[in-house]
Image (tube, rainbow, N blue to C red; front, side, top):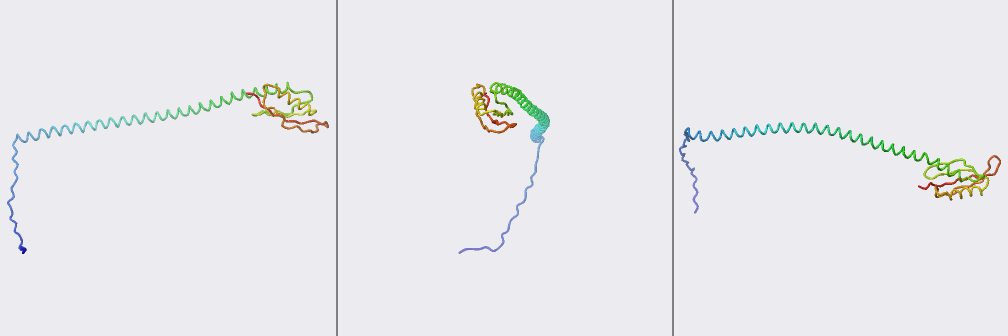
Length: 184
């Protein structure tokens, strides 16, 4: 059988002991001196950290100023590099124009030496390929002109593009177009 107690349980109150701290001067000295030394060391450490922090912040500000001045110099250098590339491109263009300037004179000199009697030129176009237009009294004169150009060592890929009989000042003539390239 199980017994159940329905009566409330009485608690007996124990008397509370009062805590009294009796510190003697010796104990106070032993506790306060280490605590004071520790507090002094902590204050010194805090002051050192604050001084170091302010010094580092000044260094960061100086480094940012130096970085900005270097970025300005980098921008100037890039500007000068762009100007230098522009000048180089212009110099190459001028050199190319000087080289190309003498080429038409050389071409005309070569072509004029190879013109047979009965042929005269009406146009000359100079690109990658040279196109010569002209008129001849006979088709044999035009063929002789093309053969003379083919025998020239300074020229390559000489061919007759077109030869057509037309009338010029009531005279039957042959208009022709010849293309060739200079040997490089």
